Image (cartoon, rainbow, N blue to C red; front, side, top):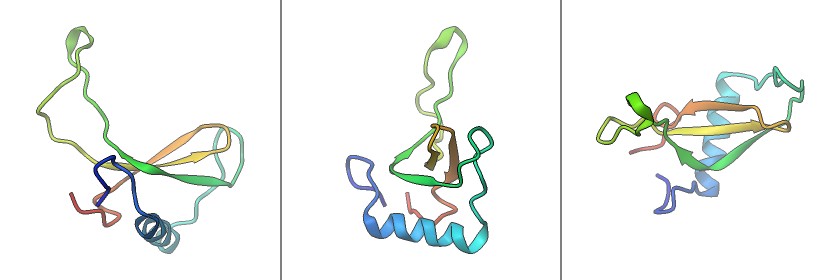
Length: 86
C-alpha cells in the first residue's frame, strides 16, 4: 500500500513490474515508438467531472499506477489488480 504521500515503495514497484512482465510485454509507445517505459512512484485516481466543470466528491475511487514513455504518453493500470491493497 502506498505511503501517506501516495508513493510506492521500491518493493511495490518491483512487484508491479514483475506482475506485468509475467502477463504482458510492454510494447512500443504508439506515439514515439520507444520501448522504454518508466513506472512512476505515485498512485493516482481518475476524477469525475460534473456538469459545469466541478469535481465529483464522494464517488468510488479506482487507484491506478502509471507507466510513462519517453515522450510523455501514459498508460494506466489498475492498482488493485496489480496487488496493491486499498
